[in-house]
Image: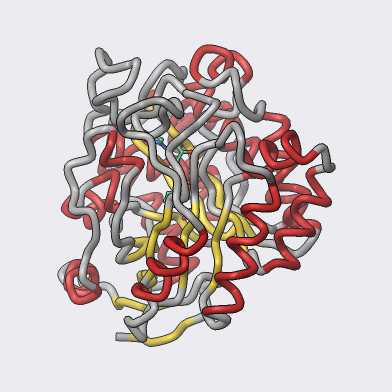
Length: 360
Ligand code: V47
């Protein structure tokens, strides 16, 4: 091991923040077990043997999307055969059905950027859900969707967030961050929020007391330096607001996308990226092993590479499966519990704010 890597190991042992150069050196290092050992040390310090999960349901209101990101297989044009849009009544029906499970604590709502729906529609859906199911946490609308609502309504981002918060949004999911680089966004998703806009919408949400998540979509056209810069941009915002709850890595799945020629990242890269994220994001409490993207066996392994959270039961995932994700579309709570127990950790059922509901 070279002197720089030795110095990084000392820094981590002493709880000293890593630099950009450290992040680049970690990506250049192929000693996966050492990276895992370091990340696991940090995870253990933060959350001991607890691994969190929740019982949730995903609802995607529409797949009609003006952004048409090159990496996405879910969004489509309004005249596509696959296009769908849900009425408020249908959303309520799905939500009420999901809530027949007494464990359900969260509705996760992420959608395409619909060209015609007015902002009022989303506000009405949220207010109706909150009225029908007041005990269910609504984790709804990524920072990209918030920017879209600002555009269609002509209102400032802050006001959009305030209106949604009053209607019943409790927190924001972490999607839409992709890679926070103008170069990458220009290539892959020029029609939606820029890196600065994504960060600004997250900042505004945090200032209003809304927690949010952060994510990174990697394994497409980005460089390793752009991955590091992305993580450091999230860390800098977290220093300012403390509003991020969780970080999630999304390995790019290329099936049915305009980037279909790109191979799936190696599982080596997935574990390495997970570990380095844990090490660089020293002010994030939680790192999610999103089993939908990783598959359950790899998500289980990720628990040894810095992850302390397995997201949820999910139930009817659409976005990643449109792009060829091989995992199930939902999991039984008992399967998640067993997956966590198999590696000697303690399953903890949480709510969306990471309050402990049950230690199992
Ligand atoms: O923003 C889209 C990603 C995100 C692909 O906050 C893809 O807990 C890989 O926001 N390959 C949307 N990734 C999903 C999202 C989410 C999901 C789960 C948990 C949370 C949370 C948030 O999905 C997008 C994009 O980054 N994505 N297409 C693809 N082909």
